[in-house]
Amino acid sequence: MPTVSAVLPASLETQLREAAARRGGSVDSVVNAALEAYLGGRDHRLYQISTSTALVEGVYAGAVSSATLLDHGDFGLGTFADLDGEMVIVDGAIYQCRADGSVTRRDDAQEVPFAVATRFHADTTFEVGPVASLAELERACDPHRESDNLFYALRIDGRFERVHARAVGATRAPARFVDVASQQTERRFADTEGTLVGFWSPVYASTFSVPGYHLHFLSRDRRQGGHVLDCRAASLRVELQLLHEYDVRLPDRGAFLTRDLSHDPASDLARTE
Image: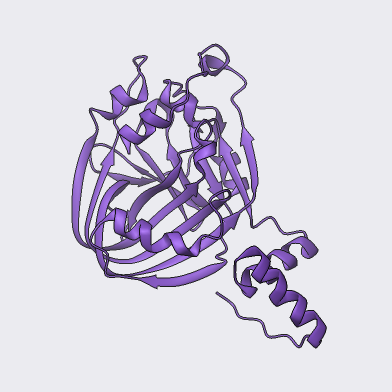
C-alpha cells in the first residue's frame, strides 16, 4: 500500500490524534477517510446484487449482468444463475468455481443472481499466524475492525496448509438454498498458495447480507477455489478495507417480485456456512 508523507501544523496533528482516539481507530484510518471525503473517492462503497433473503428463498435467476457488476467493483464474491458454482472476483476478473472442481474465468456477459463487490483499497494491512482453523483466523482479524456496526472487505493472501471449500451445483428446480447446499460438493486443497476474498457484515444486516465473515478461496494458479468452510496456515497477510456506503441493486423482474421474503434468513445462513 503506498505511503504518503506530509508536514502538518501542530494544532492539526493534535486534532487528528484526538479524532482517532474518539473513533477508537488509527490515525491512518482517519486520514484515509478525510482524503476520500475531500477527493470524492468511492473506495468505501459496497455494491450488492439482490439480497441474502432472496438467495435463501430460492431466487436464483440472473438479475444484473457481470459487466454491470464490474462497473461497480474489482473485488468480491457471489454466485451464478441457477447456483452454478461459487463466484470469486479478484484483480478485476470474475472466476467461476463449479461443483465439478473446475475454475473458469468468465469474460462473457452472464447475468448474476447475487453478488457483493467493491473497489478494493486496503485501509489496514497486518500479518496473522499461525492459524489452525477458520475460526482462529476470524478471531485474529476481529481486533482490526473498528466497529461491529460497519462493513469490511478482506483480502487474505498466503500459502495455506489446508483449505476446506465447497461449491454448490446448478439447479433449475425450485428449492430453498439450505436444501441445495445440503448436496454441495466439498474439496480439500493442501499446500496451496492463494487468496481469500471476503466480507464481514454486521448481524443487523442479515436480511440483506451474510452476517459475520463470508470468504471464498481462489488459488494463485486459478485452478482451485470455492466457498471456504475451514483453513489452516502458518502465516497470512491480511488487507482490510472499511465500507460505510451500501448500494443494493434489487431485481425488477422474475421470482423476486412474488416470492415471500419476510423470513429472516440468519439461521439458514448459519447452517449453510
